Image (cartoon, rainbow, N blue to C red):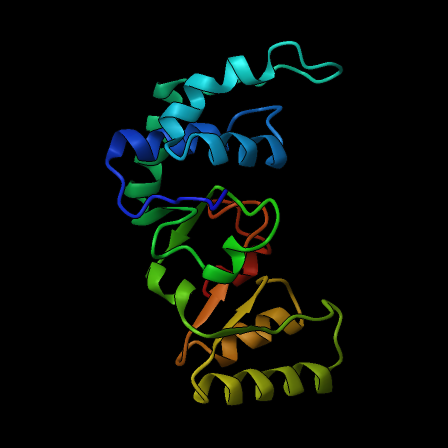
Length: 189
């Protein structure tokens, strides 16, 4: 069955997506199974106990409270960030196509950058000076050619790629979340 994704969400549905995404012991396959049956996250949350009832060997999913999710959403908004749900126009179309794509993304800045043509530039954290210069040249040239540079904000190649593409467009992907900046010395980026 073709997956149907939301295009516009009210706050209650956005909170439901956040709660589903933050549910402990809910793996990507089960989340996708739920969402294939119940495209609204609020309906998926209601169906969750029935779906996992009687599962063997697995831990019961622990859904965060509405208050917990509301506080997180409030923090996101207070930081002038955005919660982008899988399927919304601002969600990266290629990311949506991978297995176990994240249900939500926290975006600091303009979410429309996520849907523009992009290319990843990543490499060693302990790159040589020549390697870092080469990465900066490549990222700068690709940025001027109209591509958004995507990297991980790490030391070395990643940082140089971001620095070289600040004027043309860059997206930093942070594995620990938008509120976990690592390394600290890249705060300016």
